[in-house]
Image (cartoon, rainbow, N blue to C red):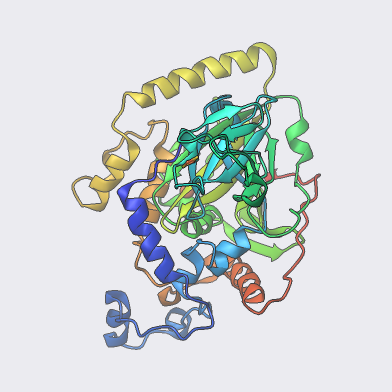
Length: 429
Ligand code: FES
Ligand SMILES: [Fe+2]
């Protein structure tokens, strides 16, 4: 999916720049939110309820993802998926917006994918309009050409080329599980993480969705299993009953991020959050059986992200073919329905209720998550949240992010994260 830069995107860029103030700077006085004002005027409550979160993180610290923001700097220290590999056709460069920056992605004649800057430094043309020549990208306007590292290698109109002095940004890339990854950080990229469980007998099913809410809101939603019982009470989660018992959640920091456990009457569901923005858990649907669910949440800008999902389906041969046929039919049906975000807007506007949406709609879970995430609003301050024991995983994610962001602000190296290849999920039902 090519990400188009819309009018909204440029507006967001401006707001992103505003939000990218250093974390150490004193926070500007904020108007009290309606929620905070209501709390202030309410009678004192029991200490357990009234105790305010100790997560004093300011909301925008966790949502600003531009190159100057702390979260943006942290996210750039990791490999990030940016595109579904089969959608990148040879000879067809595309314009990408990732982490509030624009890039050009193209595939050279050898099949290798390259990511370089968005614009030609000659007179600013978008390089996505250019032509791929062998492994290089030639600008559409006057033919300046750049290799995959961003080095200018040709200036055909110049009688005396000064190409060696011209360089645009170029970024390391990798392909894994059918996704193209890039590293946007400084220096050498970290070791590329892989998982043994994705080498099992079966196949990888990919999806990507552009979601109009902040990446951190999505990450919090992903580690919060108690919402299954409410937001997803009418959904395919019924297939296995994972929305029946309210789970007891526990978690611990690990060498890769955190392990989280959801204890229900029949067992423990274990999942992993890999710092800072991807996760592995087990999912179940009647049609696919138990599957591994690997998801990267990659910011497009402060207020939207792409969820890249790679499910590992344990089916082979005729079983796999039958599943794929059924899945294709479900997706064809989905394409005929009202778009999910159109429904979400109506629900948020009070024009309809989520219970009016058929529970067997193929994207019902995403739609319910969208209502939950968009409905929290963009102006909400996390420090106003009233967190309980069921929010302990959310609290831990906030602490890990803010601790690593603080290290960046203080010029410290931060924790060296390592993803063990042999991690396995437990299903818990
Ligand atoms: S603008 Fe790219 S070569 Fe002139
Ligand atoms: Fe959800």
